[in-house]
Image (cartoon, rainbow, N blue to C red):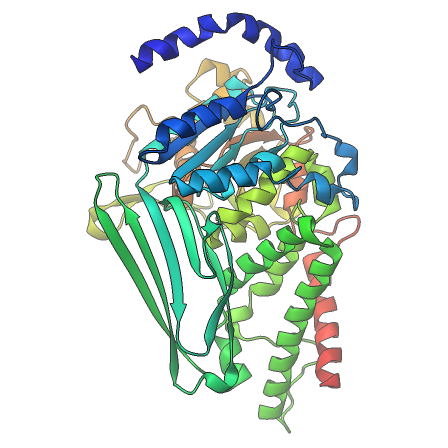
Length: 548
């Protein structure tokens, strides 16, 4: 049986396993021992699935080095932040894309779980990524994988991948009213024609972006309609179609248009554009284009407001005029420009390697607005002490008598929120960080239920915070650690999809630089603080408005 075969695999390949660490660490694998023949295994699995389609879950701990889809070692981290990095963050050739497109024809998707063991051997994530991208699959990367630290999160990711509701053999098409045309799409799919996306697998953890262009002369109606149709097969073999239709008003005033801007969706598209620029063109060009777009929009709005209130004492010299819908957009744009992908300062603080940067670049393909908002402006929550927030971490009854955890109010993403006598939780959209102030780190750990955690084992402390094995105390008389744990778990649940990994950061530890980089309101070596950014944006807007 399958289970018997899986049990025997460690014994069958024991000699290979003994040689693996040395081969992986050296980045070679030229000998039969320690070599990785992933391509041959993938080909064999795809042949088995060609008749009915399905999904391949591949777990790799080293770079494929033998047979089809073998990859050369090109892991030169010295190119990061230079003009040469583009070629290393893109696939080495089109072989993996061609393989993926061929598999998509047979309705086969590929989910990759990449786990290079510590200290983190080069795997060439950029070249492997097309296997997931063009088959509607997933890519999960665990850098410098350590079982004690990452094993729980890998287990959760695999469980989520295998248990979530999935649609199979899907195609998705977008249509629009006359005068509106779909310009481009972003996501994980294979574009079969100009507006038909082929999706061997589709699930709720993936987001798509569609950009539309329009012919102004053809828009003669008061509204235009967008329609998205998804045809798929359920896991029970039922063929279904899901249709979503949206009607949007057509306005003639720029002011009305700007009043209804969706800032989270706009920032999602901006971040995707910036990430794409890292591989396709210059980050500087993308940043300049983003700022030009923001400045033009605000300048146009400023002109309209000034014309409407002509003759009044409207002070435009000391304030930045913007509609309520755009209030958070400058903050999200500034945060996107400080993300480790476009920002050399943040990338240096994170200590990104080529594979880590490539994995982060590919993660944007499925990111929804909630994720990109946290990637632009990390959520910072106090979780200890909670004396000032008596309801935080307590259960509250919502609609339908459903229990939920009350969260404390968010803090600003600035160093003022990192005080030595506090513990805060930071969500950057990709990972959770529990920052322990030096004055309370020991006291907080002493509240944990495990002896190992109380004695300073950070991995044990993570397990305590995420433990779901015991029924939670739903009374109002909860301990401080229970309240902190509930907040952490509530934030992970609110993300949906794969649970975000959790890392513990002690104040002053080597990972402190990473946390400091997430405080996007602060000034860095080459980038302005948020206050300075707003001042500069106001000046540019005034100059632009005066010229129009």
